[in-house]
Image 1 (cartoon, protein in one colour):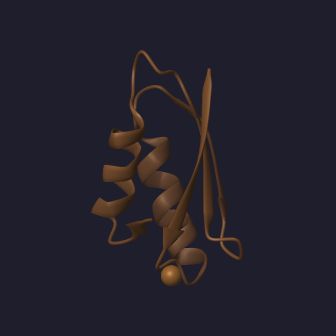
Image 2 (tube, rainbow, N blue to C red):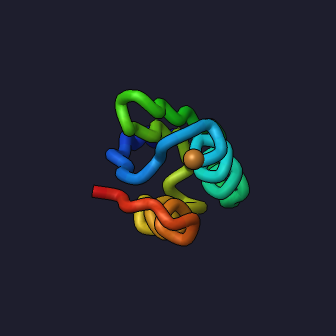
Length: 68
Ligand SMILES: [Cu+2]
C-alpha cells in the first residue's frame, strides 16, 4: 500500500471536503482518504498496481480544485 499527501488549493468548506473525499474514494484501488481543510492537504492510501497519483490528481481537479 502506498501513501501520498497532496496539497490542494480551492477547498473552502465541508462541501468541498466531501466532494474531494467522494471523488477520490470512488477510484478503484484507493483504500483510505483523509481531507484536511485547514492544512489544505489530502492524504490518500492506494494500491499502486491499481491506481496512480496522476489518476488521484485528475479526480480532484475534475471537482474543480487545484493540486499544487
Ligand atoms: Cu466548499
